[in-house]
Image 1 (cartoon, rainbow, N blue to C red):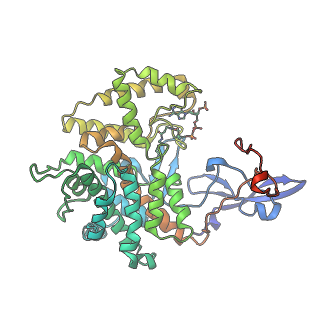
Image 2 (spheres, protein in one colour):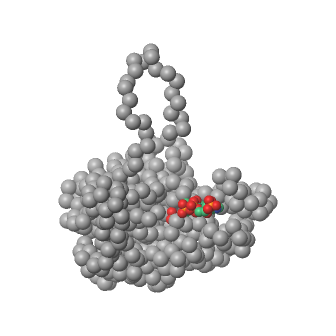
Image 3 (cartoon, helix red, strand yellow):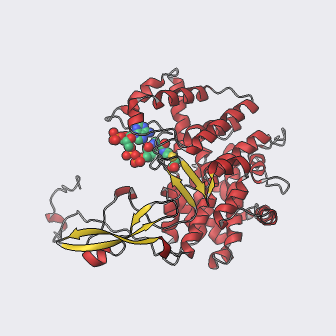
Length: 442
Ligand code: CMC
């Protein structure tokens, strides 16, 4: 990636130990400003300290633009509202990975590859019998994706040449893995993918078709699923994407890098939040809708409870994905004739929180996870699969970032620095002469 044109020629000056250092300034396409500190340590001996990378850019990227102050989210320059309104997930996956929207022929070719790669190697199918009952689906997904390296090694060895095929293969197979893990968990016969179905319809059919009651694919549900997957497609340098880049920076193959990203996504502060939202709404429902107690708990600094589905590291205004999902949620519940009291609770909770000083002062708005679980629940997807759905949607983003990172000549193995605060050099005592450890506060 050529960055020369983004360097302004201006510098930031830092005075350390009485000496001035000039740090080059660069400005991105959308006006984001950065100070390039990459040579600071070699010149001055100083590193920068930034827990959680709150203020650290790890790369330059041309995939997603996010302006959290103004609720802007664009993939490759296209607004998320327009993409969710006018495109299907596979089209947006192509856009994220390739940089441009596909022509009709390119889309047909991409879809065709996905159809051809939809099946799993039968030995992989047997894996599902060996996971203990009740295994978390994210654990199964991460293991199965990692094992793609051994079932399809020919692509692992020439990753950049075969990236298109690898992308189609993994996007297609992850859907099959997700549906199969659900069927196995339910003790149901597996339903194989069908060539005549679209990506989302195929997934729904693999999940819910039954020999005694054929599944009728509802176009409103297909449309909502397309939207959900598109809206989760990418979100620049979040925890799981940074994990995929970090693991991939050691030249680990795409499948293993994505398997690591799936593990990162699993966390309740990241992709696991959509499941936690439904569980929280169910708890509120069980307490007869007493949501004010939960709001008070969330505001209490001594209570670790947080209003899940609220707040975001980057969005300090409303999350643009949330509005689209909230509308899709209304459409799905109406089309399926579902009356879910959790939707009423969610709406009331949102209303109360948005008018509460605690949430207003901290710019806490409902995020992408707040309404998505209610849609999944209405469709029949169990809550322990919600984060799997997030992973299916996020795959194109992970692939795009892995590809961009591997093609970027500036990219080096990820290796942050630290400030060491442990003991200085100590002498080792024989085991019988050691005192009680007093390290617990370190
Ligand atoms: N409920 C109550 N208080 C909150 C919440 C919340 N959901 N989120 C943040 N705060 C408070 C927090 O206690 C802190 O207050 P104070 O300044 O008095 O100490 C202040 O707001 C800033 O919070 P933070 O933890 O410093 O913010 P962060 O950027 O580190 O954390 C977050 C972002 C998403 C982890 C956090 O908002 C959170 O835990 N939300 C709930 C979990 C959730 O919904 N996660 C899904 C995120 S969207 C999906 C994704 O992209 O991964």
